[in-house]
Length: 337
Image (cartoon, rainbow, N blue to C red):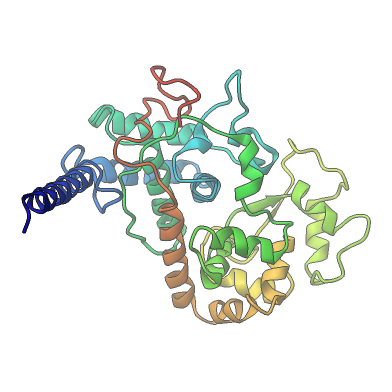
């Protein structure tokens, strides 16, 4: 073999070894999401979060609904990076200030959890992981399954109100659109049906319901359920600040269970998407299956929450670890990712 060929092969071998070394080094630097990510840097982190969720839930039952809703509103919009928690700045409106975030509250309790974690391990645990783990523990508080979720997310530096509509499924959209948006995150039809089972807890503000009651009552609503809805929502143009709500599930309003599916098959779903879920040929078979089996509902719900929580996270050296969950760290420019 000619000397030039030897030199060429040697260069190729060197390049291959170098690329492999870089790849391994990157992997060591950024393991991505893993179970118990903080076991070395903050071994008490998950225990502190769980304890805080239990304490806060004992004092304020509605915190659990908020934490569960947070994971949808944060992780479905581009990625799980706690951008939902950021306040608006002079330059941009935050996600939590949009119409689509109507009714979201209790953000201050995420800050309470963050402060407890910071006392133990300053600057280590991200708000994005606190948001995801508080949702995990809220699900347990509401009688749902314990879902083992990975950690290692880092916090985004911007909140973009203008992208919310593009990513977040809406209760008035067609079921095709809802399936498409969740599908883009890798969540298939049974998972979408299971995720909407979160409507088995909490309540819906009359602002979101009145189009089904006024000027005419939606004929598909169960007539036995309508008087209760009208009593709770007596005004065709309700005051958004008024305490005018209807429980999503009158039977077990504080329990995450499969009663939701029996309700929507009985035309007692409050939202358009609930009705569509029970009648569309793509989703109805799964609704019927979940109405019969809570075990099946929990299995699919757990898989879907896991996929949602792992949607396009920032890891490694991307993003930051915020000192406060509602404000990006000062050292970074607002235009950074």
